[in-house]
Length: 564
Ligand SMILES: Cc1cc2nc3c(=O)[nH]c(=O)nc-3n(C[C@H](O)[C@H](O)[C@H](O)COP(=O)(O)OP(=O)(O)OC[C@H]3O[C@@H](n4cnc5c(N)ncnc54)[C@H](O)[C@@H]3O)c2cc1C
Image (tube, rainbow, N blue to C red; front, side, top):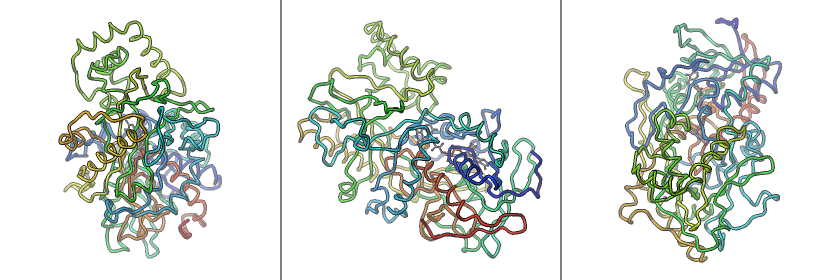
């Protein structure tokens, strides 16, 4: 494009992952007279290594995946390898509980407002109607997840919905190209903002061409930082002049980094008819895959000071041939095969299946031989559905004739100031500290006990633990590994004393810089963050419609509206 230091845009969006693409497309299509530029670090032919990921150091390699497994660079960002699980946040995530130690800095009124934008977000994610409970779907009648299950403190109707999974780069490249007022700039890194003027306005951003290092200015009425949580945080940490008018950077910037505790510590053995257990996927009328999960009554969690957690039925551990399933052994062996394994799943997902172990190959071969021909037919049908169809089978859950399933937990973390992102002494590199707290671990254990009691009380079944009670905390601490879900480091709050952005995602101390990233979420809930972030992205685009009044190089003005 023809572009120089004097080219002016109404909106400059930094980062073209799901968040950046949604804000840019939604705003540009609703405002054909306005100009939008989407600045993306990655290139069309993105090389395997990049300077951003190379300059991240991790203090905790047990519980955090290495940088290259956590994000991707290039059009579409990390959606190039994401799994596509779409879930909602829950009410309890917006309610203060003592265990959060005053760090729940958003509230229910914001949740209610963001929900209004879930329907358009669901269209971007191609995950059907944004109904996240079976009871909201009239066409799929509720039946208990297993024979004899009774809803109470534990619920069995919460749903996850699955995206295609939509690869935002591929899916929206043509839409971006067609959108006459939207310019995409690839291979360009956002670097330094101007300082705020007396009205808190930021007038330009310096960007650097990654290949040549050439610096150029982008002038815009408003800037949206959608560079993913860690890069958005790094940009703000490098640009503390943004906070000149409020006496320096907010204390919360870079702190309270949260992901999820995740893993398996028990199986459930149901007592009823195995054929009546709803263990697999449900198809919605439009073909979207849905799946049920155990969750816990919000009031119960609040009253008992517990962390929000989802638990779903899963397969036994793939790497251990004790499961005796030929199909599982075949899939495990495919996943550990060099080259092939890498093609079947991104490393972080592959690790959740193989646990990085090459284990008892004779045992697996014996399972495969014993289970022929199903050991091969089942994986073949899964391969077809998972890799060759447009809407892909999101996962593999196998029927258990014994009515016994592993339980997979996915649990909220406490916002902890010691889990943080900091700049290194060179002012460029990013240090990531990530910890699991005793409260995080205790909550996972307690909620398994609650599930066990509830199943026993109704006579539906019971839990079989894989570890002794004493071993559980250490087992949870060593099995949990995240870094894929990144929340908390630029959190929403009603003041710069408590957070980094306001409830309209505007950076405190500025009038026209916004953050659109899961880093704004003060709590992590049980939810994988991207769908909810998509709803925030649509909301931000609509908010920008309202606040942008006069544009042009002569006058950069934004009119602030009251929080929705
Ligand atoms: C293997 C895997 C599986 C996942 N599965 C799920 C799932 O099932 N469900 C779910 O909810 N989430 C999942 N996630 C997380 C999900 O991918 C992220 O939450 C989501 O992609 C975040 O979107 P984003 O737009 O904020 O950032 P990203 O998608 O990371 O995009 C940010 C973009 O900004 C660019 N950028 C960075 N710095 C700069 C800069 N300085 N200048 C210009 N551009 C810059 C990057 O190149 C990138 O393209 C998964 C992640 C991984 C790695």
